Each structure stands twice: as C-alpha cells, then as structure tokens.
Amino acid sequence: MSLHDDAVLVLKGYEDQEELRGIYLEHLRTHPDGMWKACEDGHITASAMVIDPEGGRVLLTLHGKLRIWLQMGGHCEPEDPDLASAALREATEESGIEGLTLLPGGPVRLDRHHTPCAWHLDVQYAALAPAGALEAISDESLDLRWFPYGEVADVADKSVVLLMEATRRRLGV
Image 1 (tube, helix red, strand yellow):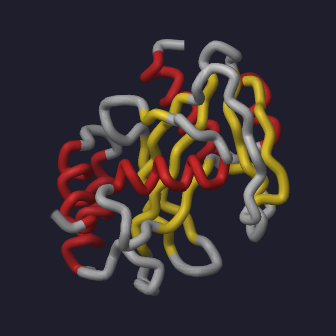
Image 2 (image 1 turned 90 degrees about the vertical axis):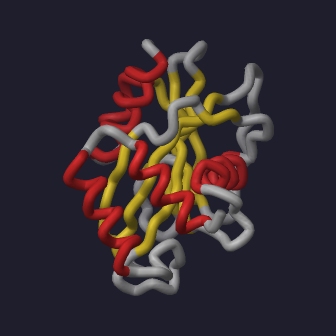
C-alpha cells in the first residue's frame, strides 16, 4: 500500500474534526502528490507530541526556522511505510529518544497551518517516552525542553495546547 493510500485510510478512520478531515481527504483526492513537500498547494505532514505521563510533562522543540515551540514532526519521506511510521520517525529524529511508542488508536488531532513552504495538513499523533528517556537536540532545533503540562500554554501556540489536551484525554491524565 502506498503512503498516500495509507493516509486516506487513516483519515477515513479518524472520527473527529469532520470538516478538517474532509479538507484533508479532498486534498488527497485531487493531489496524487499531496503527501510530498513538492506539492505547492499543500501537503500532509506527520507529527507526534512526546509525552512523559509519569512526570506530567511534554517535550517540545524550539523550531529552527519558525522559532516557536512545537511538537516533533515534519514532512513525510518516500521510505515511510505509513503515516504512523512517519510521525514516529520524526519524533525519534527530533527528540533523540529511542524507544518511543505511539499511543494506540491512531491520530490524536489534525491541524492545518501555513508555513514558509506551503500549507501543512498535519496529522498529529502522541508518543510515549520510555522511563528514564534522555533527549538529544537535533540540527533542526534551536532548543529542546520538557515542559510541565501547566506551562505549555505559556510557551506554545493554541495548536500545541490543543494537541497536549487531546493527548492527555486519550491517556486519561
């Protein structure tokens, strides 16, 4: 199955944010290249909020180009077998944490936002950090930091706060 076909299946199975989900599905229907950065009309991206439920905190990256605190994520790559793998790859690369595991149940949220390269139609997952995880900053980031749940709204935009809240609801914390 192609990454494009997997994204369609993932989105068809996602039951929240009906209007936005419809925009994503229409984009994929009309753009066979809609998974790739080269699609100038926008493209699907994959991200994951790295969370430490035991410590009551999330790991955010200070994005090198955008200079804002975000979850880990980015563009899909041809070698990604599916959307979940793309999100996990991005989270692992940008956090430096090995052994991350995605929360079951598929994506946690969708978020559509404009970036310097195009519209990003982000499919957002959540990843659990293993006990004792040590982060390592990547070359895509200016900083990498754990934030207690209660401090995320002080440093990040609404989309990150909504992703954290949805992740916590899914975890029951």
